[in-house]
Image (tube, rainbow, N blue to C red):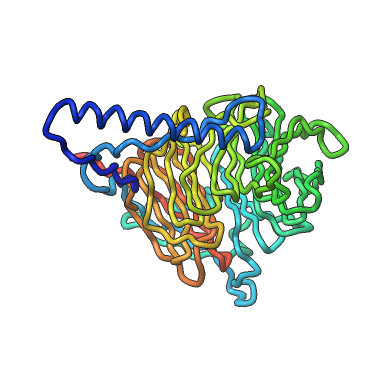
Length: 410
């Protein structure tokens, strides 16, 4: 259910004239509010163009019934370590990423390792009823690469044939690794040593990467350029004169010109790559830091925050469409992933559970409890509208792999 409550009705008047007068007064008050809001925006930074802040929400539309689960999810594989010393906060998984074909899984986190797994070796053969495979990292992992710093972000570089993966680390460095040779091939240290929270690449044929950092900037760069990659553009979201950490960066897979960022100032922003002088839209509605932004479709975006909720937004006008509540998130990055074909949203939780929401409803449709730590990362494999694969990682370093099948309609 949308968390916005409809405005209370004004006092009913007995005559039509009085009703008309009340409506006119309300319209005038609303116009004054909009003018005041615009004046405040213009005084914050004097950007070259007007910021479009989300308008006051309309009363929520009635939704079709309560949330229902149209999927059967089964736990297929658990990957952990038998070494008790390794199964601790020192191996917290901060990021999980499928390669574009969906054949490889990469993980990274506090352990300063990029681990690569082959999906075919993790999913058991079709067995009815399905059985759970319990594996150790040492045997399940195809190989790993040691990194000089803790990792907060991983992203497969498009067009590399799943050979190159980019990372962002706690030392503020973007590094690309050649996985066949298992060596670094590109390094960019332009965030002043401040932690990089997110790295992404455009999937539209352009060799453009983006990184968001604690230094308050989102930077666009060209990995083909030597000497750290030429900076194509840099923006500082938020109010002028005040730095806000950039926690999330994602290029739109539907629009070659749009990139979204989530920030510690409780807002998300979208920018047009053709004119980075100011944001195209400002998504204002969370009560704390926005930790993730993901495009659900060409028209919808989902954001996560440590205010304990997810929000779906209209990309066109920055209006809040729906709020998702059920998981617990007040202090940590717990992951966010969208299954676009299935219309599903997954996130972790500080209640030691992984949650799945159907984009149509604000309540979770499925949850599964982990043992030994909170769920710190999630990732869907984009595999069609009737079958999906979800991988979730915990703060103890364990991976769990789930397979979902769409229930047959009766």
